Image 1 (tube, one colour):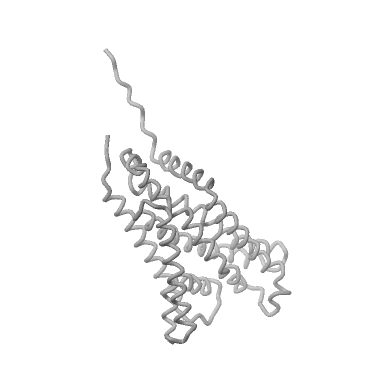
Image 2 (image 1 turned 30 degrees about the vertical axis):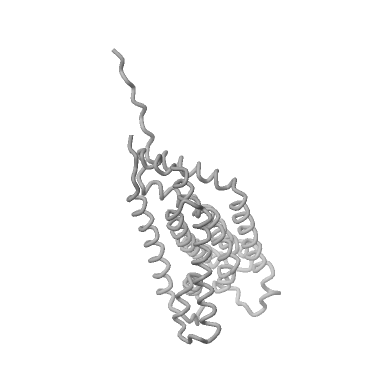
Length: 274
C-alpha cells in the first residue's frame, strides 16, 4: 500500500523569519526605499555628529550635560526622513500583498494575522530605526569618546535615545501599516501618510505662529510636538509649553489604535484555506 507522507510544517519562528527576510530584501532593492533610508540615515547622523564635534564653536552657551542631547533628538530632518521612509516602505508592505493576492496565500497557510503584521512591522521598524535611533545613540557615545561628556551621562543619554527612537518608530510603523491595509495602491497609502503627518504639523504651526489661537494645547495636534515634549522632559529640558505626559499618551494611544485597527482589518479579510 502507498502511504502518503506529510511534510512537516515550519515552526512559527521560521514562518515569521521567512516573511521578514523576504520583505526586507525586497524593500531594500527599491530605489525609493534606498534613497529614504540611505540619505536619511546619513543626514541625521552627520548633523548629530556635527553638534558634538563643533559644540564649543556652534553652541558656546550650551551646557555639556544631559540637556545637550535634545539638539540631535529634535532635528527636523529626522521627522522628514522618518516620514519618507514610512511612506516609501510602509505604504506598500500590505498594499502590495493585497494587490497581488499574496495576502490570501499568507493567511491561508498556518500564519495568523498577528504573525503577518509582526513580520511586516519588523521590516519597517528595522529601516525606520536607522534614522530614528542610530544617530541618537552615536552622538553621546562619540561625545564620551572625545571626552566632552562623562560616560554616565553619555550612557544615560544613549538609553533615553533608544526609548525615544522606539517611540517614534512605533508610531510611524503602526500608522503606515494601517494606511497600507486600506488600499491596494502603495502610492495612495504613502500620500495619505504624508498628508496626515504634515497636515497636522502644518496646521499646528500656522495656528500657533499666527496668533489665531493662543492656547498652547493646539501643539498637541502635531505628533512631532508631542514627541518633542517627551524628549525635552526625558533630557531634563524645562519650560515646555505642553505636558509631556499628555503628548506621550497621545502617541501611544494613536500607535495602539492604529495597530489594533490594522489587526482587525486583517482578521476580517476572507481567507481561502486548503
